[in-house]
Image 1 (tube, rainbow, N blue to C red):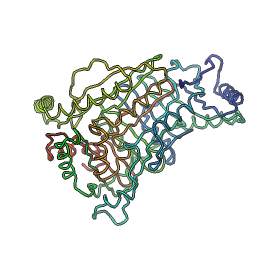
Image 2 (cartoon, helix red, strand yellow; image 1 turned 60 degrees about the horizontal axis):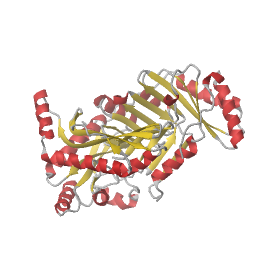
Image 3 (cartoon, rainbow, N blue to C red; image 1 turned 90 degrees about the vertical axis):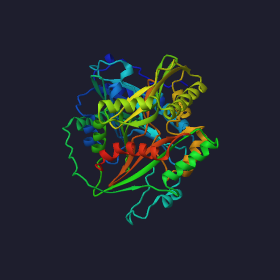
Image 4 (cartoon, helix red, strand yellow; image 1 turned 30 degrees about the vertical axis):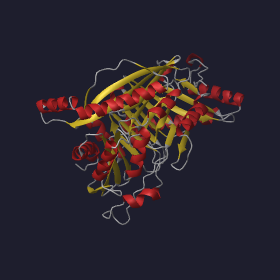
Length: 503
């Protein structure tokens, strides 16, 4: 089934939002079911992150996405529709995501202000959210006792649960693309609704967003404790266990994550933390997802697991192979020497080729044609440089929702999971000290025109009040050195530690 947004009216047929609402109510009455109505207009917004921080409510889901290489910013809050699959639910979360999209977008009306000079493809309804790393997370009782060190405060509670799927259609969204900025308001219209009441509700929201943004920067906090989350064995012992199994041929690569809990004397401000990240890592995708219960996942990722765009019956695909890391140099010469060392490292190039091979194999298994591979280069971030190979492909398919099947096939890539995947993931889930939740999992957006981007939720962590849990991982292969891998994770931790004020 091809999912599309039904835009059955031309903007020249309507001079006002009221007229659109009347037409949407009429369509709801014809179908006898509610209609998702979306209205877009030109907007001026100098700082979407500030707008989100000042205009969203604590109990509302919130989403922020800033992708510099695409000149794209999304800031969204509230939900007119959402789907959440809890950890204990055995449902196929990718299938649930597709059903959610079909249900809500197939008969939706996307309208725009007559003065909005944008193509239809610029104003589709967006769905935002994330999947968890594992199909089903650890039950809290399975890991809280293992992961709780003796030096935590007596009343400290570690549990930070996130559903295995969270998708929502925002109540409002500001979208900056290149030089254009639009505001989109979404509303579910029932057959019995009155146009004047719907208009008043949408106008009130628009007026609220137009008011000056007053956001009080919180008092600077002080970090009081940083504790590594420990399981039955310390991280270096788990790495040694993994190396033994690699040498015995059980798997070729496994990515093992460490976690740190950071405690402060007062609540962290997620928006301020993200602001620091986006300034420190302008090459990365800055993201934030809060589903309205006081828990926020945020980070700055350099890696896209899947970017897609439908053109007719063809779907264009891109996935980043990102594996192999080394620190940045203190001088231009040292930086170049370290980069050359990485490019000529047999161990790192082997690890990188495992990731390239796994992505290409999985894309081809879905029927995609792989484009000629470009040369592997360095991706330099402020504190680390990586081996990077963008992989592009296309698949001929009439229904762009196959993109979610492809995403399911790709995740987790060998960059954050391992190879063979099932054996590596089984080892990770058994031995890592705590559930990853959304760490290293797909987070992003898609829209009704068949385009979307999902990043890998790395260089990331959770914030809940005065505590944060941050993650860093390292790929373990046959000739990995335990201390080198631990040093690599320490470098990766620095991004979040600095943003949290711990460095």
